[in-house]
Length: 305
Image (cartoon, rainbow, N blue to C red; front, side):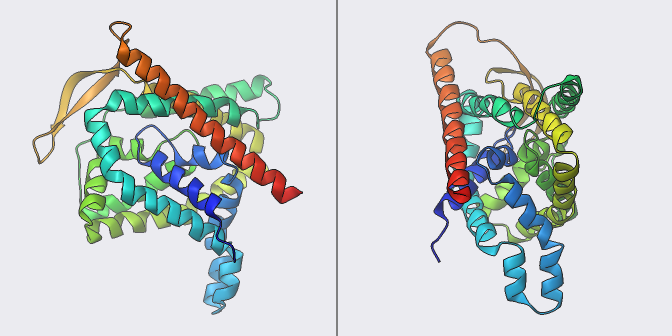
């Protein structure tokens, strides 16, 4: 069997997006043309796949969940998390403005690419989109909670974060940041803390099995309002990725002495080389997403030919 390298590459892009607060891997999956196959495979894990496993039919379960697709995607996501967790954490600490610039371009470009699938922007679609925008704006404006690394808390955080990661426009890592679980999870990955990784992973699996079926039903039975809401989610999440932010007040201090601050959006002080860099990186982020979109379209046309 020929290995689906394009799926692994898209999984890598999803994993990279999920590591950055404010960006959703679900957005990348949707734009790259693998969102519906992903939901079908995940919902089958708790449906036909589970029934086949209970009957001892492992081959049938592998076919039911589209095993090659899921494996290729999971390897890409895992590779991104293992290889990029440390450098992205460093960039978030030392170059947050430039990192946010890249991803604000990526998310902004995704708005029309997701919105075009709504299928007619009547008054009802605009109302649904405005609702999604308001919800995402509210969520991304919440201050982070005090951190916790207790395994039971990480299970709950994993369940909530994976649900958010499946939704275009809602960032799972940003939700982790709000819950106070982002730094503990990144530290667990960097230090290979098996107990904490297992706790978070167990929560993620439980969340996937439950929420993927709900989301699949919504996209089948209520596709137009669901896509309008998701488009609104994307617009509302942009405020969390605004490149320039100012520290308002300290929230808590990490064990290594670093201070976590409450941030607010501000305008750049002057037109400078940094502004030019921000614009350039935003354009680059948009170009990367557009490339994924074109790759998804090309694969879709080849599959239907």
